[in-house]
Length: 285
Image 1: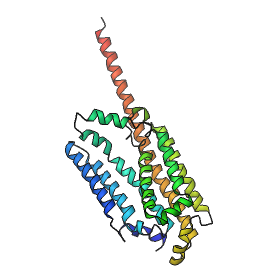
Image 2: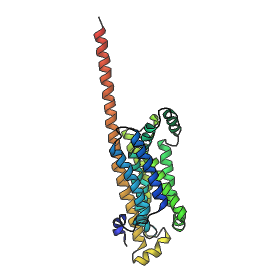
Image 3: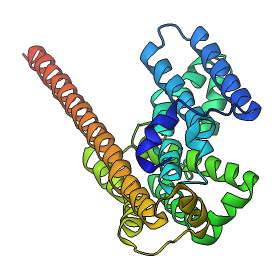
Image 4: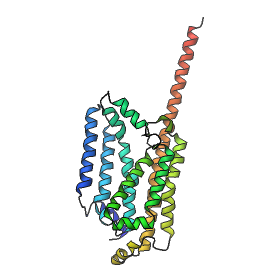
């Protein structure tokens, strides 16, 4: 197995686990129940959410997970699936909006107040700070090496990545219910640039460093007949290039979406203002 064969791990060497499978079934059952209660819910939203659940299962049950303690480059692909792609797809499914709309009418105001009560946690600056801390902290050699020795800590690391990813994408995808936290097009680009910073710096460091940062990968690399340093550099390139590319594309797309929406709102205001002015003129003697 080499880093060039990582794509084949997406469909081979699966190891099914009751915990993640049960959680995935519960989450999908709740989502489908909400769909049944909300007429006209977008099938594309549902497909995106299901793809997000599937992406998380691929990351923790396919060959990607089986070789994450053998190849750092494989481990980095797993991190990107959990940190970027799965949370992006999950939030694209608008689960919070679906949950609020599916709730009984009498319960919606209380649920909406509880969601708004999270405004400090969901503030863009807070989301960025949590993202930076998780990305930097989980890649410190002492913590990273410990996750390879302790399965429960490794699972907790996966949970941290999904949490950081959900918070990272939250303000960009307009999932934040607090109106004052909505980002316009320019701010979305700035936000995504800051979100990319820790992964770009870490990826560039791993890609350029000529020494092995994570010692536990030395022995597996020798067994495979490859260089652990080269594999580490490839892992850095994956985080730096692949991870940044996804964030750039989604950031620009969402920025353009926000700009178009703002332009439409301005045009709507102008039309209403013109109509009001015309109505006043018609009423003048």
